[in-house]
Length: 333
Ligand SMILES: NC(=O)c1ccc[n+]([C@@H]2O[C@H](COP(=O)([O-])OP(=O)(O)OC[C@H]3O[C@@H](n4cnc5c(N)ncnc54)[C@H](O)[C@@H]3O)[C@@H](O)[C@H]2O)c1
Ligand SMILES: O=P(O)(O)OC[C@H](O)CO
Image (cartoon, rainbow, N blue to C red; front, top):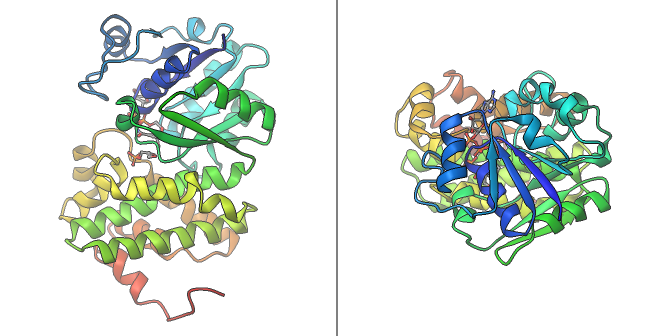
């Protein structure tokens, strides 16, 4: 039986531990909060992140990283992306030989503009083929309820991606593999920024024509930057691209969408962060993507608008207005 450790006992880390357990993988969830870990271990509950969900019996849970990482063949990481480097650093000496890292995080690091798989490779000294990424239309709560979904496991190593797929597949969770790590990771991080923009449009009271416009032009923006960074075009119409964008922009469960909606209804950024439970990665990743796009010479008007709005430079309505006031051009070609 494959042995896995999950680092980070928030909504997605805990849900992914359940996915692994349901797939027949021996899984240990590590978290820093004693009360959360005790409830997962003894009562099979996580009332803060997944209220009302009964977790599977097969999840071990601990606050002891040495215990969680001992002999773990898969090490899954689900902590806020901007803190990943600092959180992961002390774990390096605890990793088992040949452990495979699995990033669940959706963000681009501020300052370095690195994707999370790059951060993990650097911090843990792992070659590319020992780091995989899982990303797709994967709202934690729906999966914790065992609603059917698919995802993408990306790696430069087909064998590594297939190992992760085998350790997670179940009747309700279907992993596809993809060698395009850049495209899969960029899509997962960027859709959070677009979801903030769509949330703003919702909060301002606009209807589906407006949100569909922001989603579709958002996908064009993600694709444009992805291609400039070497990604494959097909990835953007797949589960990690369009699939995740649709889920996140449509769902009230999305923290990024929720945060944008609060701002559209008049909340300040600080108020919106407080009102949004959990990690809304799009807030900081918007800045990273804007800088990354500038260095690649790619225009990203929605991301630009989101950054300027979040910094208080322009009102929320600018996110949509900026898009509509650009010079007219052909959609294709
Ligand atoms: N929630 C989802 O539906 C979902 C789905 C796919 C991907 N993701 C991504 O997964 C990542 C984690 O998201 P989440 O939903 O689990 O977030 P969350 O806010 O629910 O949980 C984050 C966890 O990280 C822990 N943490 C924060 N700082 C820490 C530290 N210094 N040391 C140890 N633990 C620390 C928190 O205690 C919390 O348990 C994000 O990048 C997110 O974009 C989330
Ligand atoms: O709650 P969000 O906005 O982080 O979105 C959750 C997932 O990334 C959807 O796949």
